[in-house]
Length: 133
Image (cartoon, rainbow, N blue to C red; front, side, top):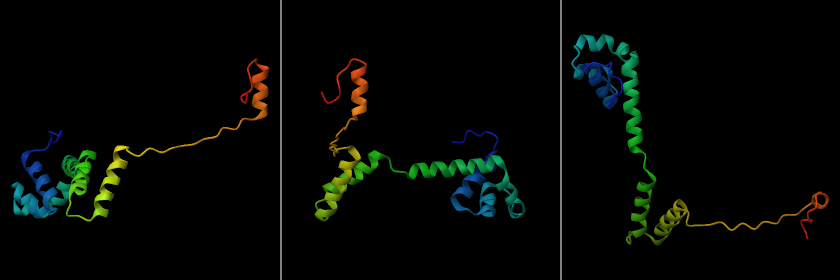
């Protein structure tokens, strides 16, 4: 998993156990360190740049795995919309949210452009017609 090859097996296991439990001494013992070492040197292990980087990498991967993709969200909303056991209002809300996600709604925009008579004069001077003509 890690691109960092500098960690030995015990350091890697320590980081993985620490990531899972948050208990440094227990993680060190599970990784194969002596109880004495685990009691006195875990702070030093946690300050080790490679170990800290690996723990950070494990944390980021776990966060990425928890984030729903757009497709995942659409599937969940579709399941809600299709669930006849739910309140109609909840199903309609799910459909509305899906429509917004997929761009089903369009916005009509009316605009009016007013021109300045000075701009018309410039066009006439360069040989064109005025904007109102």
